[in-house]
Length: 152
Image (cartoon, rainbow, N blue to C red; front, side, top):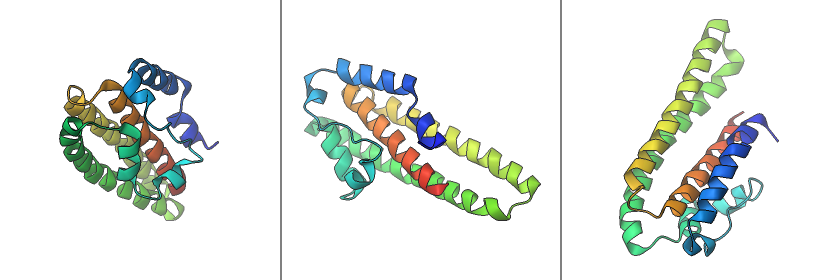
């Protein structure tokens, strides 16, 4: 397994996610199981929003709060991921000085992406059931790991 995916699926992250999902009660238990990293590309084929909707099983009230936050997050994170792809494409032709700059920028992208997830959690933590929010954040981390792996 590539190091990027391995780090994204660290045992501590998985333990916390599994604990939160199992503690969240029967609503999450009725949701479809999270796809494995190998199954994720096929699960994403109909569209990420479709996958998220199936995975979370939001109530009407939760949907009203969730989807605007989701849309804003997707716009912001798409910009970061596009920037990551541009930087990765530059690596082969970069000199040592530029490689150092690229490394700094890649680290900053990771920080910015984590900050965006914190904002999502903050905006939704009292509006969406905790287990559903954890599932969503875990799905985002899985998609991010998949995209990072494809970039490298």
